[in-house]
Image (cartoon, rainbow, N blue to C red; front, side):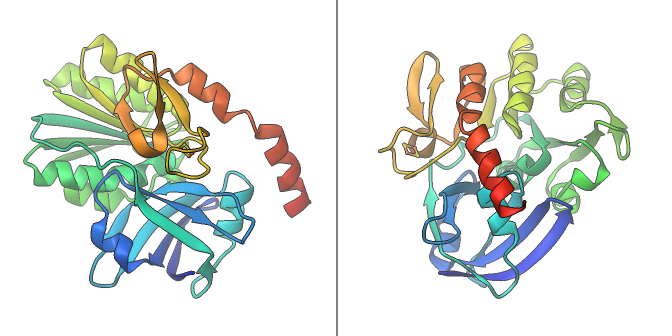
Length: 272
Ligand code: FES
């Protein structure tokens, strides 16, 4: 059981939880994730660690209410307990001094991007961060990103904050302006797919962090399998980060939609 130390609401459906998990806080690195379960029979939900405070013994997770399990988690409050939090899991982000790096974060994908931006900056990179969301209230962790980036570009679909346009437009503007050595993209699968199509055109190596359906998180069940460069990979043990130019996003999108109708029925039971 892991206690919720604080809960912060970013927008109607996006919440930040600070959770007591001293051992995970101590050993986590950028890119690592945890698997969270709410209730004994709850679904196992992978969430990337946004921050960790070793002194307080806490980790920070950002959750968007999208389905049954995330809704159950978002209904918990400060002082409540999460049934279990397992981790840190996965491979840490490969960080080095690449030169100039563009980090594109969409929606809640900005949360797992934060430790990567911080680590890239600490390694001496020039870091340009592009934050994107449908509207102003879906742009999260802006100040934290400004503190760790050389420049922050904000793009909203409806133009309610920053500039009106898609994340790819913000990324391309930087590529046309200066030499970019590396790109990281984290967000909805469709957003990562289009960032990768763009950076492939300019031959800029791009890493993506994938958030597939997971069950055991240890490479045994196969639920998180994807195809990368024609080979089967497991997101939980081989990832969650991969060379975005090699990922078969269309197959991944199809697999992620496989349980949509069951999820919909269960959501109607929870909130009729
Ligand atoms: Fe089971 Fe990755 S979650 S193999």
